[in-house]
Length: 311
Image 1 (cartoon, rainbow, N blue to C red):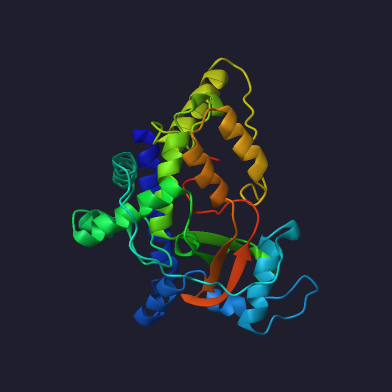
Image 2: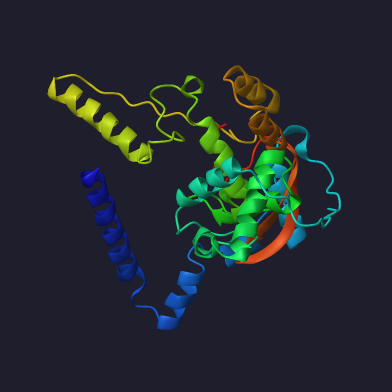
């Protein structure tokens, strides 16, 4: 692991040195503009075209093209006006649920990016013992207990960034980065923590999304490198096969997931929450720091939630 961290640190240094070498001759103000828009999104978005090659002139046209590209099958439904209702204060949650929310909050990183609600985990930790903080944690716990996920908990922001070495005039040349609301992610994390100890649901060699394997990617890489080195030292050849599931979260099916969880003995409360987790949710599509439109997802689970990769 130390060797891996050292390699990452050296790579960061070399990338920064390359940046200074390539951009150092520029006027300081130009470097600032480059830092604000490192991908050149503003110019690239102006040349975006649809599948027929026709220019997409307005933000609304671009938003619709991204939505049609990212959502699959029968998910391309017309957007409906959201109705947000306001109810009275939430009832007190059980001690068990509150303890689980506290545990989930303790397991979060302060560097996590906030999304539409603009509430970072660090702020949640700072106010957790205040009246406001206790009310927030109680609300998260009640959502987990009842399985009724509020509309605001479902809100997401989809930030479009260009893929390296791709044709940015095409919609497929852009990668969506999904940011979910912190309050909603905290509730998702509670449920994810409940599911992860059910070992018969996971393969013994699965390293990601497993509780107690926080250095999952590093561990998997070190084990792989060790096997390759042993094989080569022994005079053998080593072959590494990499696979990727296309649109894995978009194609996750509710019925099969719930059946697997019920087979593993998951409690009714967790099943209810997971079923609600598959319901429709809205997301904002943005680039250059501005929201350009809104989309709706009616299938699969959201990227950016800690529960999605566990499921």
